[in-house]
Image (cartoon, rainbow, N blue to C red; front, side, top):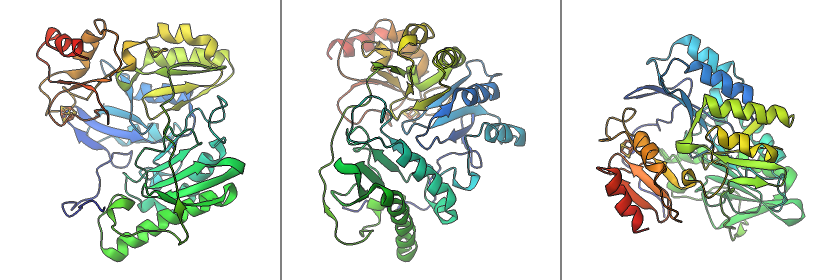
Amino acid sequence: MATDVSTRERADLCPGVARPFGAADGAIVRIRTGARPVPVAALVQLLDIVASQPDHSLQLTSRGALQLRGLPDPVPADVRAAIVATGLVPSQPHELARNIVASPLSGLDGQGIGDVRSLVRELDEGLCANPDLAALPGRFLFAVDDGRGDVAGFGFDVGLLAMPSGSVTLMAGGSDRGWVVDAGAAVPLALELARSFLAARERLGSTAWHVRELGVPIGPGGASPVTLPRGAPAALGQHGRHAVVGVPLGLLTAAHVAALGEAATHVVATHVVATPWRSLVIEGAAGSLDRLAESGLAVSARSPWARLHACTGLPGCAKSTIDTHAFARELVGRMPLGSLPVHVSGCDRRCGAPAGDYVDLLAPLSIDAAMEALDQD
Ligand code: SF4
């Protein structure tokens, strides 16, 4: 069913380097990674940009992007130049369109049906090589799943799903139908689907941000039924030679990045992959988990940070009645063992709350009040 987009009278406000978003605590700039490895050196450069902030950190978003906040508003030209100098904005016209999520352990842990890393690279480069695709809305999402089902449920606009025998199923708008093609044809067809979305939007005079909002199908005929696999997010901890670490509250600090640099240097790998679950995949870093844990990163599913989350709250969001991050930091030491995610919100919009069941801590008045809710988990 098509979503009613009649109230959408504006473009999305997803922030970028060329289009920062003004928040209560200053400008926000989002830097998309295209689901590709990020040099640790680039993380250091980004942290340098916010080094004068009292609690300087990089935010990780639910699409595996990096975010700077609290910047001067408007963002000075030298700050924009410093962000671009990290190399993380390969095409400035396309910065808002490079929304790609992908199975972050693909090719590393022996799970999944195929290794989709080259497909992701080809998709990101193909996107940036097509000037017309720079017009995609900032919410339009590509998902590349290696068959394990960890990102297939992401509500994508264009999905690529690895299949046995090296083929790929292409899907549009989260549809339960798709086209099975050779891997070599997958990215050109994915880009063509994105182009078809833009053409349909123009033809219909639509302001849709997503394929499902168009109300009409896109793509060639002959689609077959698809059963999407459903798998769990990459678990924190060791995966063979590799490591997945959780970033508490999605805030990557200088201490974390210093430990990443050491871990990366130790194993002669210099990059990390930001996952859509506010964690990082570090190739070859299984032997460095203790050092990573020392820095404050979560290295096990038993860490309370593996299930404790919070919205932005004060001072970044003027709608909040509490400093959600400070509250979560106070709460984390008293968190009982439990299975449900726990989400602290500063108002009833509950930004960033998990999709399924969770413990809802809405503007809690005290740690004791939160503990009462947790005891019922
Ligand atoms: S849930 Fe409310 S307080 Fe928290 S970030 Fe969203 S709007 Fe702001």
